[in-house]
Image (tube, rainbow, N blue to C red; front, top):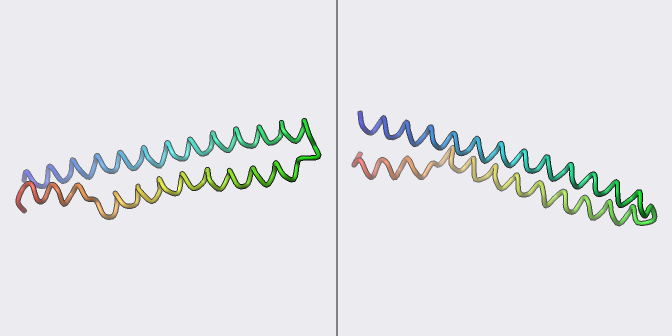
Length: 95
């Protein structure tokens, strides 16, 4: 019974951590895109002749900004589907 309780605690903590990773990653990306779009509009309003260069740079930074979220998704999926903590609990209990 002790093994089942420990495993349930590990799984619930893992789900909570993955939720935080995905939620905060999504919120950070949304804030980043808002700031990025606003600065693009300010830059194009100040110097319309640079709109092509600014737009290209914006798309490059947007891709890098999205990459941060995808790394968080990958880490979250690793912890959901290949939870290393469950194996540690199993080894500690001796099961």
